[in-house]
Length: 130
Image 1 (cartoon, helix red, strand yellow):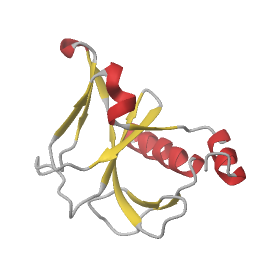
Image 2 (cartoon, helix red, strand yellow; image 1 turned 120 degrees about the vertical axis):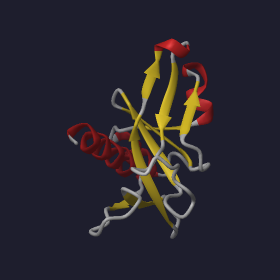
Image 3 (spheres, rainbow, N blue to C red; image 1 turned 90 degrees about the horizontal axis):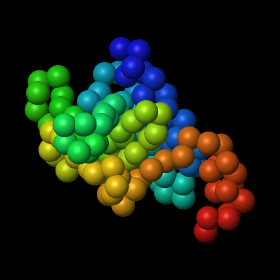
Image 4 (tube, rainbow, N blue to C red; image 1 turned 90 degrees about the vertical axis):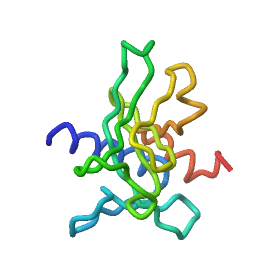
């Protein structure tokens, strides 16, 4: 339980540092939070998972994306996943599969890395990234 909450807090920190608005549901939902990207009005439902490196698979990163029932999350459950790996935060679309794999050498091209540093927000607020 502590590891999962830690991942959720890191994900929220990363989203906030990148200018997103973030909210948690007060009733049980299949997603962990909703967030809105800067400059948009659409809320995205996000499921947060811990990822791990598979040494038996040449260091590939895997994020298991199954509900308690063992079934994968469908589009009705969440729009995006955030995977937390060793304190780093990555976001990717829900493709309705139960495992998301990516090579360590291609993680930044296949998944979106979210900085957890407040300097990201300062750049957004100053308009330096536009």
